[in-house]
Length: 230
View 1: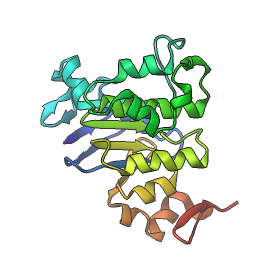
View 2 (view 1 turned 45 degrees about the vertical axis):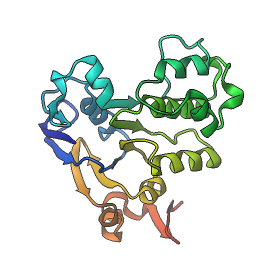
View 3 (view 1 turned 45 degrees about the horizontal axis):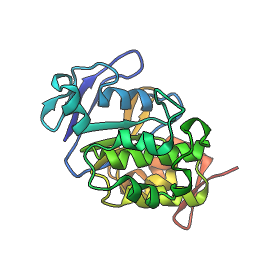
View 4 (view 1 turned 135 degrees about the vertical axis):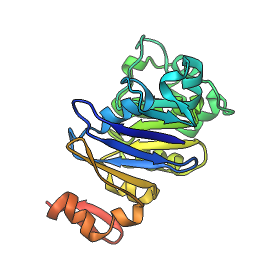
């Protein structure tokens, strides 16, 4: 489904991996490790001839084909007109989904915000708005960059349930949330100083030896949850 072959730039070094169709991926790593840079390479925001998606060279795809194959959801809402309403923004987002805008708005509990200008949305409301846009876009592969940042526990649970469901097609998720990564059960790629240091199953990543390798004694594992040992 997605393949990147021996890619390097000023931040990333020798990035080489592939994921199969219907296989989802979590990208983990410390701040500044290159996670968002990698996401931008994979979706074509950053130029590369090393990426192949659904057996097509990403660079060869026109804008319509690229929109069908891949969608990148950034960590912060970025639109050309912040004064449009949430509903108007979602109208622009609808491409390949069978869901109606009203269905998605209701699913994410955004009914009371439909007419609110995007510039007036809280950071958490913006996160849900971007998730709503991804559902309406419904690309074959969606890359989420920190989809649960700025969310309270109830909204985080709602996002988790959607990411765990079949409401989206293939997905790649960048996150610092180890509990989210563990519960989703996706394959794990861990990047450190621009290099891939781990690429394997969820179960193997969360073995004690790997947790200690990447996080030292800063993480403790209690009753199937992972917490910072303060």
